[in-house]
Length: 192
Length: 192
DNA sequence: CTATTCTTATTACCTAGTAATAATAAATAG
DNA sequence: CTATTTATTATTACTAGGTAATAAGAATAG
Image: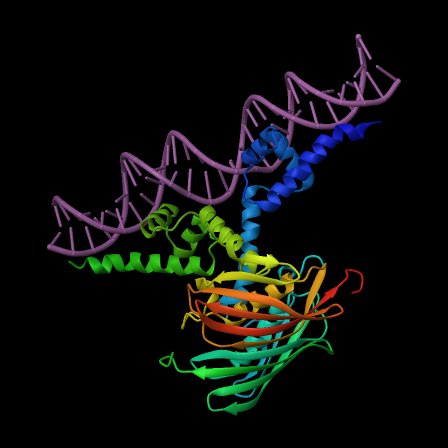
C-alpha cells in the first residue's frame, strides 16, 4: 500500500492549516479554503479530523484566556488570594499556577507572575491611597510548575518616613522559590 | 415635563446593562434580557442607543486586544514590541501603556508590567531552549502613566558559564523610569 | 382624552457555522 | 484496464446570535 503518497497532499494541507491558524486564529473556513485552494467542506473535514473548533469558539477561547489572565494580572489589585492580611505588618497570599501562566514548553511559571504576587502583596501591606514600588530585588530560587500553589509571606521590616521596606518569601510546600525585598513609597493623591 | 421619571427606569436599566457587561462581556442579549427583566428587543434597542456591539463583536474585540497586547503578557514570550533585537547582545522593546495596565485611581502603570517588559527582554536576549530568571534587582525611578510609551534597552554585560547578567534601562521619552539588573540562566531541556 | 415615548412582538435577512448525505474525482491495487 | 478505496466537493436542513425594519400595545404627561 502506497497510501502515503496519497495522504501527503492532505497532510501537508492540514499542516498548512494549523500553521495558518497559529498565525491568525481569526480566519473563517471560507478564508482558509481560499488560502489552501480547496473547498469549504474540505476545510471543515480537515478541522474535524484535527479537532480544531470553529472560528467563534476559537475567538471565544482566546478572549476567555485573556479574561482569566488579565483579570488576575492587571485588573485586580492583588495577584493571588489573601490568606492573612494584617495591614501595616504582614500578609500571606496564595497563587495557584494555571496553564496560561506557564511556559508551554516547560510548564515553568513565568517569572513575572511570581514577582507580581510578591510585589502586589508588598504594596497591599501599606495603608495609603497610593503606593508605588520604589525598588525591588528578588531571587528566584527554584522553578515553580503548573498546578503548584505558591504561598507568599510578606512583612514590613523597616520604615523611613513614607518609605517602607518589605521582605517577601514565597514557598511551594516547604521549598523556598522566591526571596525578595521591596521598597515601596506611600504617596498622597495630590503630590504627584 | 416630568419626563425624567419615565427615563429614570430606562437609564437605570441601561446603566445596569453597562455594568453587567463590564463584569462579563460574554452575555447574550437573551441572558441580558433575563437579568434586566425586559424583552430581548428592548435589550437590543438599549445596546443600539449605547453603541454597544453584539456579543460576537465584543468577544472578538477582547480577543484581538489579547492578540495585540497580551500575547505579550503570558502567551507570548515577550512583553512589548521589538524595535531591535540582537540576540546574544542587546535589544530594545517598546510597551504602550493601555488602560487595563494602570491603577484606576491614579492611571499609574502597575509595577509588574514594567518589570515584565524588562524581564522578558532580558530573557529574549539569550539564545537557548529554556531561559530562567535567577535574580532581579530593579529600581522604579518615576511613575509611568496611561498612554506613555516605555522603551526598554537591554544589554548583556556579563557571563559565567550558562549564567548571564543583563542590564536593562527603561525610559519614557528622555526620562528614565526603571533601571534593572537581571541574572538569567540558560538550561537545556533535559537538565530539569 | 390624546400625543408622545417606551416596550414588545414579529418578520425577513445575515454569518459562520454543524451534521449528514450524496455525487464526483483521483489514486492505487491487482 | 477495471474495481475499489479514499479524497473532495456539493447540497440540504438546521442552529445561534444576531441586524434592521415595521407594527402594535402600554404607560404617562399634559
